[in-house]
Length: 233
Image (cartoon, rainbow, N blue to C red):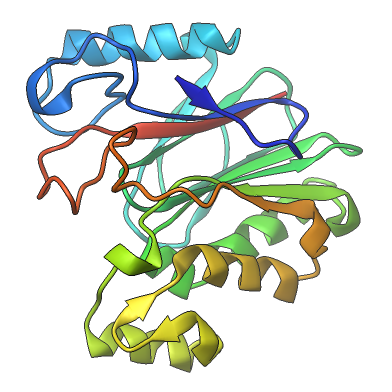
């Protein structure tokens, strides 16, 4: 049900599609999206959070818009693509189905963050903006651990030439771009290290959402469920 990063020591997880109450195209642990039964989604959310000893009553989530807006988290839904907090017990949740989730934890200053990094968010360096907002809450770069979850891998992520050019314009190394394919996980690692996060403090799952254990928007041609990445302290 949950996959976890070895470098994040507070409560957190990256969900799979295994388990849950959804059926049909959404079979498994669908946590939102599509035309699935809302009651099944709610039961899936309650079940999954309970496995991490977390409560729906403390949920902070987003109407994600594939941008780079970072919000200071509060209980309920906001619009944007990343959340940060220095408050205890809040549950920061990112919804994914090909885009990469990134979780952040400053273990000394007790600041957390969660970002949704699709190609647009990655190109506009949402990881950098999340770090900057964490610093405003008292985080220090030397104490921040980052974990990059599952997402669409380079082999399955072909884009138009205009997207490649946007990455080049924004300073991404050509080694991360191959013809019409982009390595989004490595692009986000690049942004993190470029902004002072030690590479030893960055963990990547290196799993592709095309694997049957996950939901994938592209693989399933838009009719699919959603996974979550969550973090709380």
